[in-house]
Picture 1: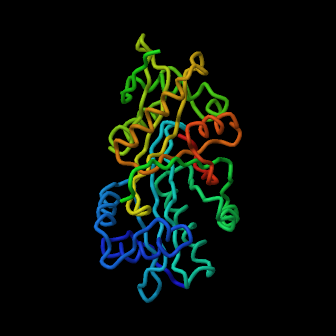
Picture 2: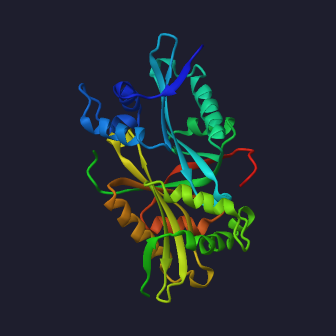
Picture 3: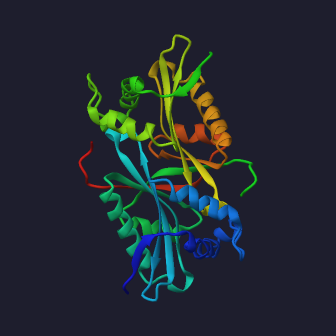
Length: 157
Length: 157
């Protein structure tokens, strides 16, 4: 299947949030309504104006949005001043899961990381998604680290 | 002990790299020489000009640098448009390890994350440092995720 990768625009935000919310973990966290709450557009503006963030959508041949991911390029002093690419917020539209699109999305993201001279691609995956771990291992990722989270008690949104 | 947190300046870079290199994993990755290779100053400029990066040093009463960490604030659409604070590149000067400075540094970083309205503080810790895992758990972090890394075959530096 021919798919196209492009930078997300403001008009894509409702489609992206719909995908983020249609997920066993995402449905507990998101606030998908029509019209979409303004806080999502404010967040989009923060991402869109930051040159180290690339929010990406995947389109099928009918120009429908069938996937999304966010790449962050983080500059560090470590590794002799290396840049890391971090992948987060990956979702695939429910009806096209299991068709190999996820694999194509990660191949694209890894190539994009090389273009931007990243020496390392990193992500964290929730331990409650064991199938995702296996998927990432097939792509060459190694689970060498613990991914630790501390939720602050701010109200969401 | 009274310690002071401040944003790192260009003049601090050699002291930071010395600490990064004086570590069982860091010594395999860094290139600490006098004078310091230019690539570290180029990386410092990338960090210093990015408003979402805060490279921090800790000073003792004699204004010596005894610790460092980097905070990255990453904007996402997930969690209703939340901002995450990510902590990386944490080091403490060898002679003051085990004195509680690490705990003070993390308390400072978590407070800084609150100030910048982050809803989540995250980090990854190498599984070859089991003592670090315990340290982070005492601070309230939960190891809910696998931290996955893919090293690209670019030459370092």
